Structures are given as C-alpha cells and as structure tokens.
Length: 448
Image (cartoon, rainbow, N blue to C red; front, side, top):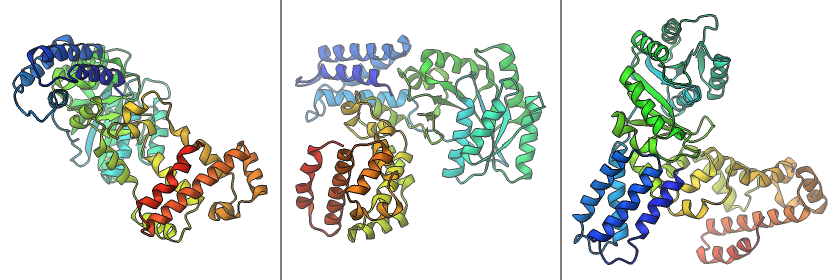
C-alpha cells in the first residue's frame, strides 16, 4: 500500500540526514522532493503545492525550536500533521440510526460496490451487533442479484430481491418494508453502476435517494484509478450530495492520490477502506493511522485492534494451563495459526508494525507462508496431533507421503515445534528470559 509514495518521501527526508538544523536551503530541497513525490502519487499539482507550502512555512517557523529533535524527524512530524489534516483530521462515523437505518451504496461499475455492501453488512453484524438486510437494486448487470445473494450468505446476513422487478426504487422501498416487518435494524441498498458517469445513471441514483431518503449515502470508488477517482467522486457528489467515500482495492498498485485528496477536493470524508478480497478486509478510515503507514511508521493501534478481535479469553486460559503442563500440541498450534490468518493479509499485518514495512517490502509474504505447516499437521491422525511424542519414523514417513514433503522437512518442523514448546513451558514456569534465549539460536540457524 503506497510503497512508491513512502519510498519517495523517505528519500526526501534523507536529504536532511547529517544536517545540524533546518535551514531555508535544506527545507527548500526537501519540500521540492516531497512535492515531486505527491505529484508522482497522482496528487493534483495545485494541491501538492498548497500542501508543501504549508509544510515549508511550518518548517521555517521551527528553525530554532526543539534543538533536541533531529531535522529529519522534525520534518516527518510536520509532514504527518499536514497529511492528517489533508485527509480529514479524524475518522468519521456512519449514520445507521433509524427504524431501520438505511445505507445507500453508489458508484461506477467495477468499483466494488456489491462486495463492499457484503463487507459492510458483515462489519455491522459482527462489530456493531446489528441485524442488516441487503437489498439487490442492480437490475441491469447480469448475475448481479446472484452475486449479492452469494455474498450475503458468506456474510451471514439476509438479502431481499425481486428478480422480475425492473424498478429499483420500488425494490428499495419494498426491501425497507420487509426489513421493518422482519426486525432488521439496518438496510444496505446495493445499486447499479455504469462504466462511466452518464445522465441516466445519475438520474436513477437520484431517484432512488429521493425515494428512500437514506440515513447514509456512501460513494464507492476504486482507489487504483488515482486522480480519476477523485474527479468521479466530485461528479457524484455534485449530483447526489453523498455523506462519505469508500476506497476499495487499497491492497493493489495504489499510488495514493485518491486517499490523500478526496476530502480536500470533494469536502466529504473517507469512511471506510477495503484492503483485500475477503469480507473481513474492511477497515474504518483513520487519517492519522494512514499518514503513519504512508510515512513508514506502521500502525500498531490497528494491529492491536485486529488481534483483540480474535482474542478468546477462555481459549487463552485453556492454552495457558496446557503450556504450564508442557501439553501444548499440534491442534493448539494449528488453532493459533488460524487465529493469525483471521486477522487479515499477512503482509499488511507485518506492515502495521513500526519499521517492518521497509524490511519486508521486497519479500513475497502471503497466507501461503503457513501452507507447509498446515499440510503437515493435517496429514497427521488425531492421536498424533494431540500427542506429538508418538511420532516415530514410520508415522513420519506416512505423514510425508500425505503432505508431499520430505522426511527432512517433517523432522525439521517437529524439532522446531518441540523447541518452541519447551521455551513456552520454560517461560510459563518463570525460568526467565535468559534460558529462553539460550534455545533461540538453534531455531534461527535452520529454516523450515
């Protein structure tokens, strides 16, 4: 996410490395590079210049302030503060109050409206304890209703549809009536899109909005289209005056222009960002956290939040007892892997940890990193998973055939698992960090 922009900004700050303080000359050099980085990220030149002019003014005003702070660090702080303000200052909530609350989804075809509708439904059901209803109002695109039906099933929510009805306003109104009759407290209306902004599309979405009077209207836009996304967002807002923006495909080759300038150009906040294809890959947009990630500072708050979502107190206590008795087994290990995977895309998670994004940017890290381990454990019998000590050579040969791995790989994994289990047990008994560290070199010397 925004790797090119992050790299170019990092280069701009490096110009200040070794400098004793901020001066007009080194500030001007850094600001010039920052402006180039923003323009390369598809930020409108006028906005980029206004942004860097503010940065320059603040930097010049800080020439003789905070002598204990290095010039590069001070410039990063100034840029981050301005970037946060450019993106809206603070996160904006979604209005789902009402009986029911009605959320209208609008956008171009291919922007990800239907998938976002499902993600939002899942988010509201799981994190806001709501009972959402999806309403299929795309009466043009082939299989649009079927797609929403499948997504609704995956999200664990209901869907209202009228396959033979061609009036989207009537479908939306009937869907709201159905929601009231069946105790749904939120209605999410998925509408049709077009390949480009046109008069008939704008007229239809306006009619739907005027007909159902939604409590919230969200415009979904593909962030990979850069400045075109911002221009489309403005055209839609001029017509239907929506409440907020949703940026999709932030996990793709995104230069960052849309995220940085939508608020400035349209005057409407980004409310959600979609960072993957899974229904869980939806995040509330926080300008400060996004600015930190763009500047390579990580996003530890979001990382902790994702971890807490998967935390099960009863399971943690159960594992603690097993670890103390040195009974941690392959079933427990597999459960922990699955818990990590549910937190989201592995590389994105690593990127949230300060300093890790630069270290891993050229590494091919994805969910398949766990595939070897999972295949080995899944090739074991239930007895073997629960009792690692029974694994003799004949059992290892059978497991190797079952998962398509070599005996050497099986032995390496079992040895590493055993070392990990011993260290966990040691720590649970209060043996101290020094003894745990004695076992670490053996794990680090070998790669499974």
